[in-house]
Image (tube, rainbow, N blue to C red; front, side, top):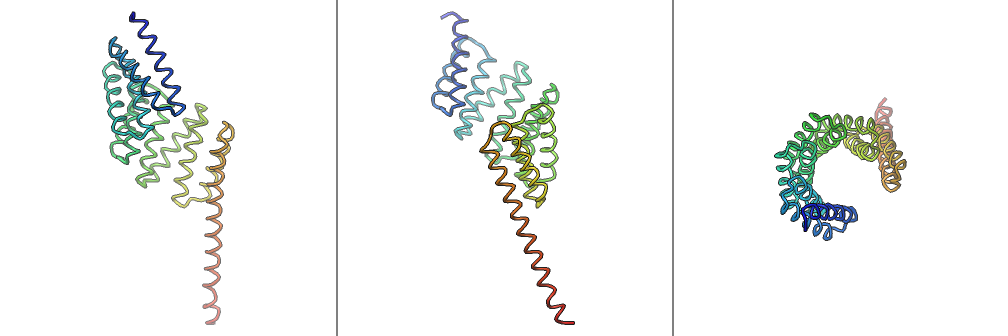
Length: 245
């Protein structure tokens, strides 16, 4: 088979693999990415080899096979670094950070998200900066560093709003609302959950919109119950004073 025929076949395999990955058909995706990887290796196309490795890493990540995902993300990262592809290097750093965060390896995740953020900033990739800021915020929230998380989520929301990425805007509004809820900032959390539900509804995410509204209702109910208990406690506290006069 001629070189260009092999490269076209590998490209087709990667395209099919991506379709199976999006459908959750991971076994088929792995087989196709692996075949493409072998072709790219045989013809010496390092960039496309790295792309196949990245695709495999994503599939393994979705299957919670974290060790395999880390190995493949790392190999792809090294290739993108070697060939000077800064955008793909940043994406690979972000993917690695995601896996480490899922494994609660917060120090490593923070390092990788920060490096990804720096690369995205250097190359002027605005939406990539938003993704990296969101990832860093998730790490800070997991570590109960809520002020830092709030600042990073807010910056990410501004980016997603500016570039018109409604999905990630809604996702980040949900995260910011959760942070506010955890801190006891109930009114702010209700407002953010409600805003997120409107965005989800706008992009056809009715299930996510419903979840956001239920979260807002839960916070509102908790706030009302706390207000009632506080009022009753205050009322009960008056009786001994009144009776002692």
